[in-house]
Amino acid sequence: MKTPTHRSGAPCWIDLGTPDIDAARAFYGALFGWEGEPGPPETGGYVNFTLQGQMVAGAMPLMDANQPPAWTVYFKTDDAEASVKAVEQSGGRTLSPPMKVMEFGTMAICAGPEGAHFGIWQPNLHQGFGAMGDPGTPCWFELNTADGAAARSFYEGALGWTASDEAMPGGTYTTVTAPGAEMAFGGITAPTPDVGKQTPSLWRPYFAVENADASTAKAVEKGGKAVIEPTDIPSVGRFAALQDPWGASFSVLTPG
Image (cartoon, rainbow, N blue to C red):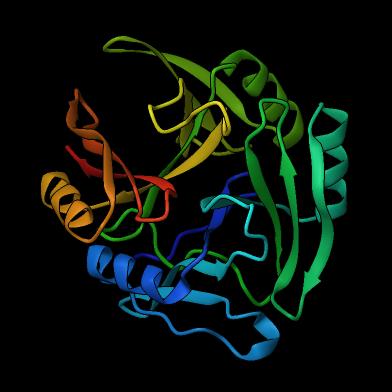
């Protein structure tokens, strides 16, 4: 596995908020081959998932019974305070102000005007993903929202992204690129069926897999749900939109 380089403004980490951390470890371990043990008490039971020794994602118990299970995507910054100010100046909200996470880094939780929550991460010891793009690791990050125009404007201002529209079967797909990068890391598109009225917009991580059909079947076997069955996307690959047993949304993709 090749260790990725994380640019400012690009995704550098994801973590899962779940009501059952042990069952989530079993589900994602069976699906992607991840390993992970809860950290010491001072970490609140946080789990760093690894694959072949490389960190690929995190998970933590939900602190509020009313909080929906979900994946959070974190975007790298060199200055968390400045990034939060840019979020607010661009029309977003700060849900949790910058705070140091021991010696690992500084984090903040924000929301765009379209309502999707996301994280800001200023790394110290925890640099983020140790692998990306290989089977079982994150490979794409997608914002599902009914207001793509507002989201595009917000993230261009808040995080300095470049957004480009590309013709795709069934309509236009907006790809997003971090400042100074040549390749897009994700996209903005209309909501999938699991994005309902209570959660009008959300960030959805994609995980690379060797066989999207087999991974979908495995997810369903282990208690998950297929929101969009495996589907071919010309020049991209074969993907499926899924939910874990607690309702957290993610996708799998076999590049092709």
